[in-house]
Amino acid sequence: MSSDTRQSIAQQFKKNTSVDRAEIFAHLDQKCRPINLPEDADVMFAGYVGSDYLPGSVVVLAINPGGGGDSYTKRIPEDEVLYPILRSFKVCPESQVLSAFEHVNGAFEPVVKQWNLWRILGPTLEAAGVSLAQAAYLNAVPYRTRGDKMPPVHAQRTAWELVTAPSLNVLQPGVIIALGKKAGSVLDRFYEGDAATYCVPRTIGDSYISEPAKVVLQNLRNSGV
Image (cartoon, rainbow, N blue to C red; front, side, top):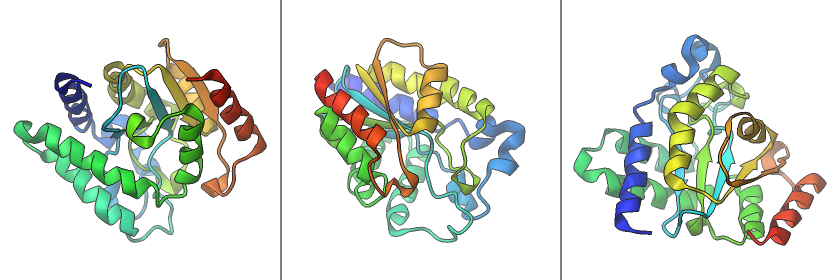
């Protein structure tokens, strides 16, 4: 990828951070806001772009960042690393956008492999024939929700229009893989592009790979994406 393209992606992700959660959730923000760690609830995590990502490659779409459960009263070690970096990216000066963006990406790579999410993300990337560094990862709604519940449709639509669609436009993926039926429903509802789309079902806690997910993963392998 050219340096100009990488800079354009970084600039779009920086622009994304100007969309605060109140704009996305509107009058439902208090209902959707996690009861703990309010400062982290206000931090956007729009996603990650691997260092070897190229237009036409794979974008993985999750529903939104986890960590909004009522029992989540303090940061886990991974969030102690990631959330200060996300906050720094939002406020970085124009001259440092690319370096701050790459700092987010570099932090995400080891962090995500500590999350339960990796139990399904890792096999999904393998089935698609790409490494994490060759893929991008987006959250359809880039803020936490109370109890990790599905964001309301209004929030899905606003986030899609202001954050997700512009990100996809600059990434130009050839394949979009939704992780879980929640993300899949957002993709089905709002995506109007030409990329091939898949939805890999998830289990609670990503504790195992379900039989329906295995079928989708095999279809991915067979497709040669």
